[in-house]
Length: 86
Image (cartoon, rainbow, N blue to C red):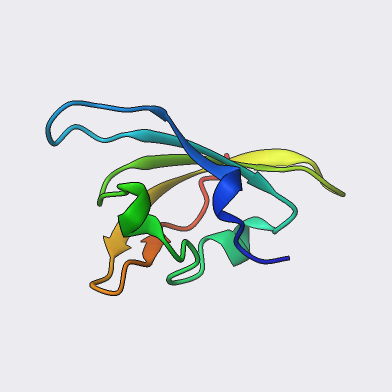
């Protein structure tokens, strides 16, 4: 599977420089999701460094992982920290 923009939504917007909280879902495993530049349109969505992402895997081993946005490139892609699994 690949990144699907409609499956990534800001659920807690914030004012100013405070981190936002994003909820995302899909069939990708957490190591695919936290690969560099996985979020192809992160800048266009309004993602910023230190935003929190909760990712829900919806098939096979169903579960959720927590990530933090670590980079947003000039080209608009965003990258996240490795999953917090514990």
